[in-house]
Length: 397
Image: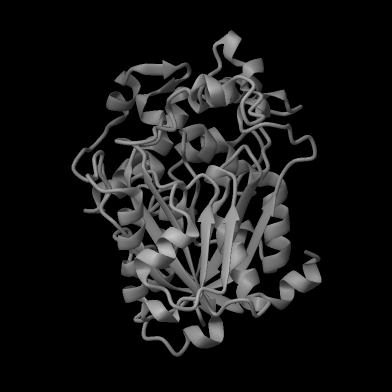
């Protein structure tokens, strides 16, 4: 999309409803039930009726199909559906699809959802089956598995080690990101880690999983679902709750994107500059603003290192300075860039980035459990280092 066209849709759509289930390690419910509960909660939050929803956007690895959800919700006029990938890189791109559908007249009101039993069902931190990882579905994992690289944690630990070697980043600096997210979760009764405080000694004493990453460098495994409702800004202003205007959305990747699902990202020329860098450039150009205009951010944090490198890629500090920036207090409530104000993936729950969008809307509404005073703009990012996506939300003022 050319910047001129992108600029023409600034603030033309908004998120008007948000919904979540509880976050747990064993939901006792199917992913369809979880998706239905989150979507009904989002519809109720927007004070709409299910029959007013005419679009659905899902993630490509969600087990709930659009027709499953349409039947479960009782939708009577589904006119648009879309599937966006891949995995954690999808959420903001899913909102982008909803915006495109609304702006092109294909739909009026679109549900964007993610549902998973990420602890009691499919566990993304576990190695894939042989049929998937060796000669299966073009994963390219067969080039890495013989050398012991099997899961995301292995890949991100190598990227963390590269960042440490190149820039002197320390384990304690990663720990400050984990501690920041835990403090925000401690203020959020819905977070999985709401009642579990953490000190730097706790962090440093946690067991290594894939060095240099420890237990608390890893995101949670969560059963649950989230959903948001997207509609036009004009229609949003007729609804009771304040809209979170979508200032801009962007998707993108690096020039040397590799084939495969994720492990092949290790073949890129740089392990410390990710698709978040070109996405940031596109996003800021479309939004007509820059990192200095962001009041609060929900940074995708499947691992502490993913948050640290994105702080650099999105321009909040120079390349290589993410560690000192995180340790400076800049990420806390009194800092220049409060992040992950509901606890993030590290301490609230892991719903593949939809939690970050929900929390972004809360910040714009002024209803977060860790509310940033006078927050008018919120950056939300999606997963890396695959092709990524991001968006900027803002108040209607």
